[in-house]
Amino acid sequence: MVILRRCTGRLIYCRITFKLVTTRQFDQSWEEVRKAGISNPKGLLHHVAGLHGNNLIVCDVWESEEAFKKYGEVLMPILDKLGFPMVDILITPVHYEYEGKREDITSRKAV
Image (cartoon, rainbow, N blue to C red; front, side, top):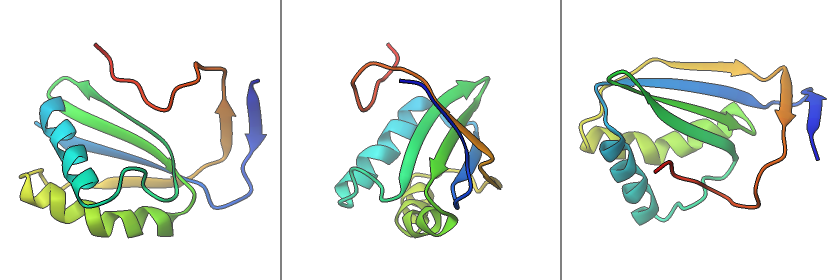
């Protein structure tokens, strides 16, 4: 089923560009987050990440800015420990949400 709806709640879109960060470093950050006891961040609805040149770009949709900031309390010290550069984070309210058909899986990693 395809879902298209105007968003009237507090959903937010976040885009983070990490300059000179590799997918290996990104995977390591997720391992550290899981070690901290968070395998499914509360309030995170959609998460994708990929390389664009030498930059790693992360795009998320969160239930609210508060949920994103709460997760940041765990994530930011981990990224700092791993040597991730400080970045500006684009946060914007979601205007429309579209959810297309997909396989019944929770995550995929490109090969």
